[in-house]
Length: 117
Image (cartoon, rainbow, N blue to C red; front, side):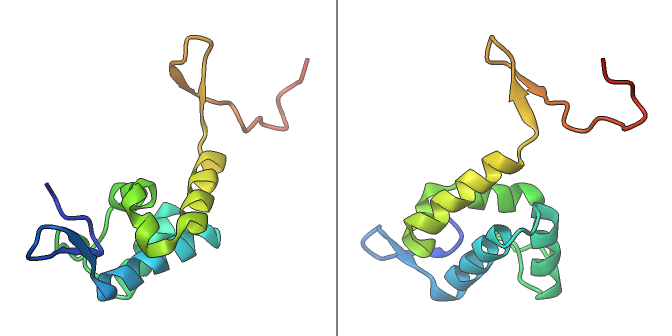
């Protein structure tokens, strides 16, 4: 089992909140809920010189996205912030589903020069 960022493994085998990393988790949720994109969150973490969970200098968008989706972070940010982030992620998603349930890109942007019939 991989220990999630923001937590430490105790001697009895349970997870305990690592307050230094938990502050970063709260910051990530806060920036995202304030309207920052995944890329902007990555840039903010890089500017603040906060290493990624794997120890690399720069976080990836996928790592931030996974962190925002992991329900284990309810213990750190609270249920309201976590669910708000899930609603925000769904609202920002540009993937639509066809009748069979297969994902496809939704057409959201139509050029004004295109003739609408």
